[in-house]
Length: 176
Image 1 (cartoon, rainbow, N blue to C red):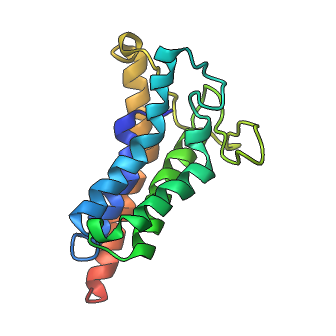
Image 2 (cartoon, rainbow, N blue to C red; image 1 turned 90 degrees about the vertical axis):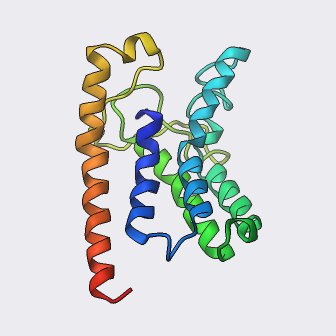
């Protein structure tokens, strides 16, 4: 998995691209939270949930069904998020889906249960350039952690920054 902070980057980039005139700050922060939410499944390790279990890491919380549920909850909460229901659904669904895609592009661990409940299989993309982040803080704060951060900067942060700046430029040229 990429680091939890890097999972927020696509949502941060989308917010930077659109700006608070197009999406409310509440919706923006909900999207950032939803982009990181699937990794809260690691709490299950403390309760004996194994990595490969349905409720384990990269299981149910890394499925498109979970993304649909988050989008649906966002649509229900749209008045609180100060936005239209379709926008809340789409943005929160995309935030969770971006998490699934980033994990499927990592170099290790188990794949993501993207299509659960239709399939228990764990999937990766054929091309996996993002170095997998260690779950242990001790290992993360070592040379391996620096390697992971370098990989994330190259394969996630830089592309997201480039797309955010390009979208911002394009929208400004459109008078939006």
